[in-house]
Length: 178
Image (cartoon, rainbow, N blue to C red; front, side, top):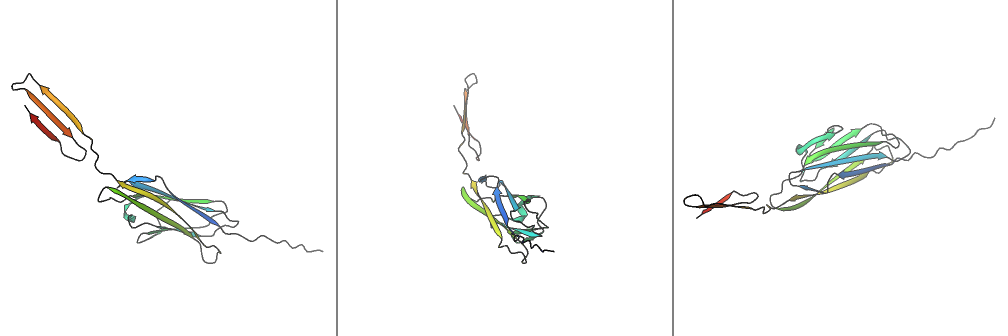
């Protein structure tokens, strides 16, 4: 009888992570929707993995309004962590959440960069992977949006003329003249 030795190729553990925001720019106080996709691109199943999302200082876990598929397993300061079981070869796990963008005290803009990373147990030979998404938060100055309306009623005694204007973010100004 002959013995045939079959050499199996080594198992390669590889995970690809992609982080996106639904918009490049949002208004101050608006909602930023983040999505994180983790895909097993290797030749072996990942038995367990953890996704950590480090919120930038401008964002707060308390301002998160929606999680998918579930809230984080742990929130430590501004770090959100989800732990998942096995990820089969070619499979993708998606995490998403909505967070309120910061209110800016003055007109202008701020860049909010959010980083996510994936980690696996120490016994798996994998260095880890990370990706980030950046969103510009804009606080617009009050725009001049002026409505000018003249009302002239010559049939009134004395004749009445009213001129009023409206500016966004201001009170109404009414000038009565004769």
